[in-house]
Amino acid sequence: MALWGTFLIALLVGARAELPGCKIRITSKALELVKQEGLRFLEQELENITIPDLRGKEGHFYYNISEVKVMELQLTSSELHFQPEQELMLQITNASLGLRFRRQLLYWFFYDGGYINASAEGVSIQTGLELSRDPTGRIKVSNVSCQASVSRMHAAFGGTFSKVYGFLSTFITSGMRFLLNQQICPVLYHAGIVLLNSLLNTVPVRSSVDHYVGIDYSLLRDPVASSSNLDMDFRGAFFPLTEKNWSLPNQAVEPQLQEEERMVYVAFSEFFFDSALESYFRAGALQLTLVGDKVPSDLDMLLRASYFGSIVLLSPTVIDSPMKLELRVSAPPRCTIKPSGTTITVTATVTVALVPPNQQEVQLSSMIMDLRLGAKMALRGKALRVQLDLRRFRIYSNHSALESLALIPLQAPLKTMLQIGVMPMLNERTWRGVQIPLPEGINFVHEVVTNHVGFITIGADLHFVKGLREVIEKNRPAEPTDAQASRAPPPSLAAV
Image 1 (cartoon, helix red, strand yellow):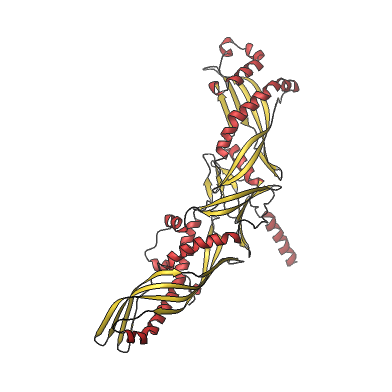
Image 2: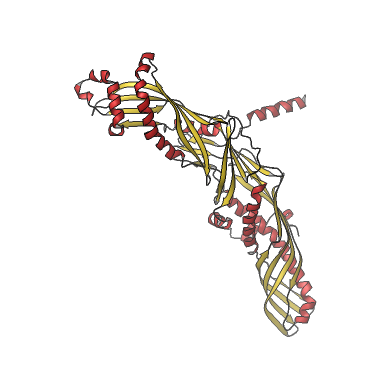
């Protein structure tokens, strides 16, 4: 009985699970590019390692090793790959570090000092980044695991006490190797938890698109990694800025991502576009009013001729009044995605009136207009852009069939007005695009759009237009007073 109850609860939870309007898949083909950029950043971080002074005595020999600085990092072998439940794993083997430090040595009454070069050989680093969803819906690095070791060190001791150095070099370099082992993992932990998260903070979660609507790119659940890709499910929903808590129920087909040939794939369901269309509708943006000189002259003449009978019955003070043409979308438009293409259906009311100065306007006609728009998607930079074209146009009266017949002469001029006057304004806005949830400094290139039943997918490659260092330095948080404390990982993460 308990098992049956647990099964029912699981079904109910599954039924309530929110479907994503947008999905992103990062494939293993992107990792080589990410690794190259990441290793450059890692080299710079390791070169900033602060190594404590090493001092002590051995018999009558007193030594002080200070001002240890990493001068060079050489990475000969590295691998970045996805690992289920660990998300992202970086392995570096057989690397080397070039060091420079100051020596101060006292043997009986003899003193020697100066700077010396050393090298750490056989450096191995294995670090894993665990990605998750934070309470605000943002992707973040929630944990960093690390194991680092330096197998051997070599220092070119010389000078007055070269023979003594030869005796003690093993002891001194062993101490320095121990200190290096202790410092590498805290640096990587700080780079993951603090610095990489400052980069991920540039990914939009809830942001405004324009003066009318905003978009919600909250993660619905933690990212899921397989051996070949990383999948992320985003809400992908628009909302009117005046109703920030409003949401459209997602009843569309869930996007599916199967491909792995490109670096990244983005999928959008019909819900993504429907939420945008309904948000603009609720915000009152889907209407257009043309009065007087704004009405094209040819259309003005045709409208006056079409409604001549109604106009001549008006008073002389009204006959020559400016013409008013108002288009108002009467219901939220809907998007339909098929393998053959994407269409948007729109129903609007068209009102024709005269506007006498300082008098109430006189309505001549009200009609229904049905539109079908074709939509072509494109990805430029990290903006999803839409190009619209008018596929079908029809006007009719909701009063009588006879009045609908009388509107036939208006079909062609109204369609021309839409194509010449309205569509360019729409395309100017839709071609600006909506940002895709990518970090700052990364863009899409070489995109390919594919239509499916109920959703579209866009495959693309990635391109770094800014280096990780540049973006992180711009967005990094202020370091706390105790900077070393912020670098310290939990004890289990630093393996010596």
